[in-house]
Length: 387
Image 1 (cartoon, rainbow, N blue to C red):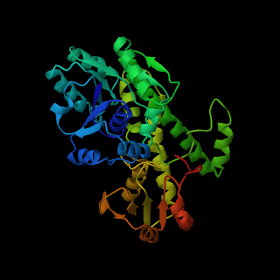
Image 2 (cartoon, rainbow, N blue to C red):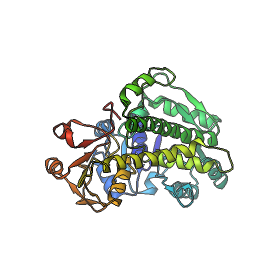
Image 3 (cartoon, rainbow, N blue to C red):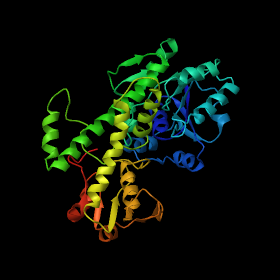
C-alpha cells in the first residue's frame, strides 16, 4: 500500500512519518527548500520525535512533482493550510479545493482524507462538487512540538464517514499508532468537522478562564497560584491546562474559535463570542501592567508560543508587543528561531547577553532558566513553568 501526503507542516509531516513506518509515503509540497531538507533527512520544523523518525526513515520521499505524488496511491492525506479570512469569516480552503480539483481531473480512485481544519459543512459541499472522489474528513488533535507523538499516541481517532470506507480509514490510523487502546469514533463528516472546532474552542475557553482568574488576582493583590491549585483539586476541573499566559495564540486556537463563531450565524450564543473577546481583554490588561512599570525599552524574550516549538504564528506575545509599540515604547526581540535583523520594525538580537543589557523590562510568556540572572527585569504571568 502507498500513501501520498499533501503539505508538510506539523500535521502533514507527522502523518507522513506515522505511516512511513509500514508503508511507502510520498510527501508533496510547493516549497522547494523544504522538500530539499526533508530528502536530506532534516526536519524543517522543531519536533523532537519528527527529527528522530525522519533520520531513520527509508519509506519516505518528499517531492514537488504532482504527477509523481498522485500516481496511484491508495490513500491521499490533505494537510494544506487553511488560514482564517477576517473579511469573509471563513477559512481559506482554496488549497484543499485545488488538490481536489487536481485529483478529480486525474480520476483518482484513492481515498482522500482531509486533515486540514475546515468549516462545518465543507466536506459535504466538496463531495457534492466532486461526486467521483472518495472524500473523508478526519480531524487532527496535535500539539505543536509534539505532533508526531500525538499521532503515535492519539487521544481518539475521529473519522467523518460511517461507511466501510470510514471503517478502513479508522483502522488505518489505529494500526499505525503505538497506543494499544484507542477509540475510533465514526460519524458524519459535518459532525467530525464540528468536533474539531468545539475541541479547540473548549481549550481556548480554559486558557481564557484561568487568565481571567489571574487578572482578578493581579488586580486585587491575591495569590493566583494558591487559588488555581485549590480550584484544580476538584476532579471535575483538574490540575491541567491551567497555567496563566498572555493569551491563547498559535495557528489553531485563534482561527478555530472565530470559525466556530461564524458557524453560529442564526444560532443563539453568548459564550463563544465571550471567549474570543476575553483573549483581547487579557492582552489589553497585560500591556497596561507592563506600561505601569514605565519602561523605556521592552525586550520580548521569544516570539514562539511555547517550549519545544519554533512556531510564532499569531503568538499572544505579539499582541502585547503591538500594544506597547502603539504607546510609543521601544521594543526589541530575542528570538533564535528568527533569521532576520528586525521583526515588525523592532530590532532582533541574536546575542542573549546584549539583549538583556538593552532592555529594562523583559517580558516572557513562559519563564526559563536563561532569565534567572535578570529576574528583577522580567515580567511574566507563568506560575507553573509549563506550557
